[in-house]
Image (cartoon, rainbow, N blue to C red):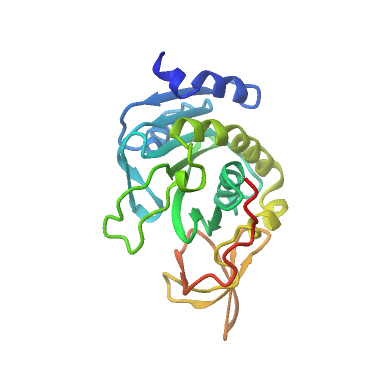
Length: 265
């Protein structure tokens, strides 16, 4: 059995190639960061759609410069690079998270702007970067999903693992389940934006109805997300629209409606 067979690389390629002509799949045993590598290539003019899977990352990156480290098999880390020219980029990380959650389990929730949550703990994160090459835009979408339980490493709560929701989960099986719907979601987003996805996101929104605080000092009640993917925060001064490039957000206190989606798996 070749290494690529383990990752279903050929089956993924056959699924995705009709949607993304020129698509290639690469699996690397170790890399600094799959996003960093695909951004390097994009700046060198390599714009063919590429899926890069990293079995382990030595310098994986999360949003706002956080480090994401992964050991082989414990998590799924991959990046997808493709030419991308949406009318509006707002809400892209929400669309990506929604696609992953819908592919994986009805109980997976979404924490604005780019985290997957399972039972009040972080299950995965998304990092989106864009490069402009000769007047064309290229997007690199990186994902890290915890497959197996991992130590808390100084965190207040240990991260969630996908095996809690899907006991048979493995990194290759997870990739095979999420990639094709993700490409479809990206193509729909490119033409229609976030607005058609708003109600589906709200059904999984972990922050809506909760008191939240932002890294720039705002506190208030989360009213959900707007049609362009901004977070809506209500306090004594009125309603504020928060855009994901500016701040991080954390909930204050427990979720008032912990199980909005019935588990039907």
